[in-house]
Image 1 (tube, rainbow, N blue to C red):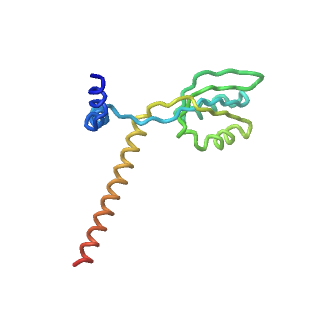
Image 2 (cartoon, helix red, strand yellow):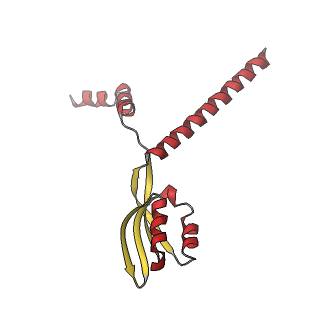
Image 3 (cartoon, helix red, strand yellow):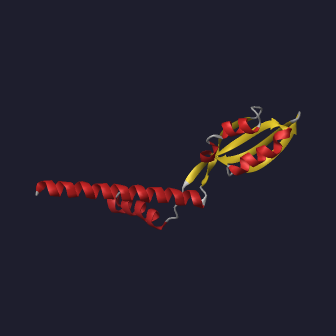
Amino acid sequence: MLSIRMILLSSWPLKELCNKVPFETGRWMVLEPIMHVEVSAPTEYQGELIGLITRRNGLLQSTNEVDNYFIANSEVPLNDMFGFATELRTLTQGKGEYTMEYSRYSPTRNDVQQDLMDKYQQELNEKTTTQQKQQSNKMSKKN
């Protein structure tokens, strides 16, 4: 009886069905890396630091003040961290510092997912148009 089950479980149609059903019925979402970011600067820049984090879609987790330095711990999507160091130095006149490390993956915001789908659809349309032109050129050369 065990050998029959093994044959059934390893059969190609069953494997295909196991792979196909979740893709057709499952809920899709795009994940992005979320980074733990610790930013520190003199306390006079506290407002600017909080603004900087929120503009980059960061979630402020905790704040602290040590020896006239403001420290903010937050989670920020990695995609929103590009250019962060430059903006931090500009806002704090070079006195701000930050560290960043991977925290987890999380579903992207709806607007980011929509942008990705739109770009993918545009590339797919361009590829299809290019292929149609190439086929048309081949047909005209044969005639």
